[in-house]
Amino acid sequence: MRLFSRRPKRAERGREPSRRRAEIVAHFQDFATTRKGVEAYIEPPTANDPSTLVLIAESGEWTRRRVPDAKAARTLANELGIPVYDVNLTGYPASMRRWSAQQRHKI
Image 1 (tube, rainbow, N blue to C red):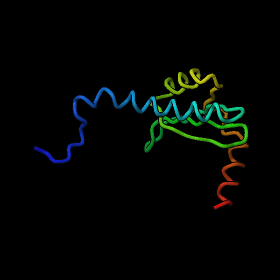
Image 2 (image 1 turned 90 degrees about the horizontal axis):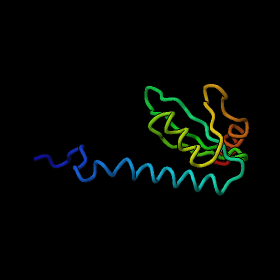
Image 3 (image 1 turned 180 degrees about the vertical axis):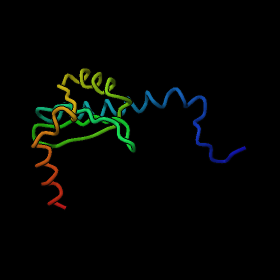
């Protein structure tokens, strides 16, 4: 018998992904409804990180969460009713860079 098993119990296995998805959807819905001009940007997977979806408001404020793949990211953006772009094709908006720079100077 192991004291600290890394595998979730059978009852927990099926519920975890749906619970995480619900949390991500709730977070993105809150962000999209409380900010103006929100757009979604899909970031491709890297060697260290899976695919991610970044929501960026018109003001440049942004939030990022992991997603299973680009298809799931597009589906989620469509559910939220916001435009979706591929970062490799469009890059990030200048407003995001300005907002991030302002946040670094505040610290």
